[in-house]
Length: 231
Ligand code: SAH
Ligand code: DHB
Ligand code: MG
Image 1 (cartoon, rainbow, N blue to C red):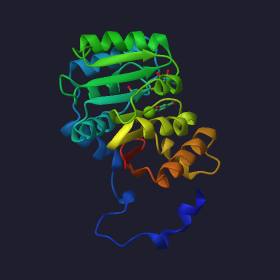
Image 2: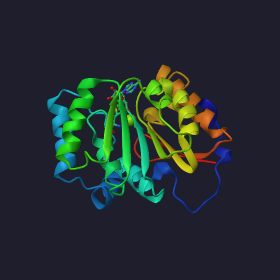
Image 3: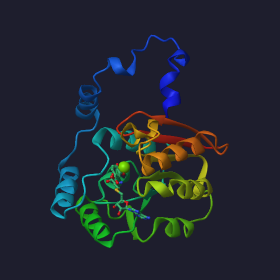
């Protein structure tokens, strides 16, 4: 909102450059090339998605790599993803799991789910990933037991992130991670006239910021990756 733009005085002096002093496009590519190189399977997931006419709204590689590293750092064995699309982020997550680990990824569109299942099988992670078809709110409500999951990743219908927040709070173990893509919504969360989705994401960010069940922040990678640790 405009209030954030007016408070330059609140910026804490630091040796770090202002974000505006950095070439974020070039630095994002620098990170991608060093840390988030795609192999043939990841490229194939995107190619199959294109052929199926899906929108190109999968995570960018640097964000997917950050998610993957966080899943590994959490020592995660049980992960839930909300919003599978073609299985691109699911493949990054699956590769951070031990052989006994499981990713349950939720997708409302059966065509998307079918394409994702083919890609995940071709990439050799079908044994670790289960694609469930249906509305994520209902599918999450059916998951359990409480506290059985290490990571919950949200990347579907933004207006329902607050509903998914409640399910994540229930499903995550203490120390478990809640992650959510698109926390910046292309920067429009700052704009009071940024549209309905921007307003919804802004409400979600505020909700998480004051939620006593989570210690949270937004990592400024890609479109903003909200990261919360369950108390
Ligand atoms: N995480 C994916 C991108 C997900 S795009 C990746 O990075 O590769 C968002 C997906 O969420 C779409 O496939 C859409 O069909 C699905 N979706 C939207 N609303 C949903 C809902 N209510 N329940 C489950 N999936 C939903
Ligand atoms: C959209 C959804 C996403 O999750 C994303 O990362 C980018 C765009 C969309 O619905 O337009
Ligand atoms: Mg997204």
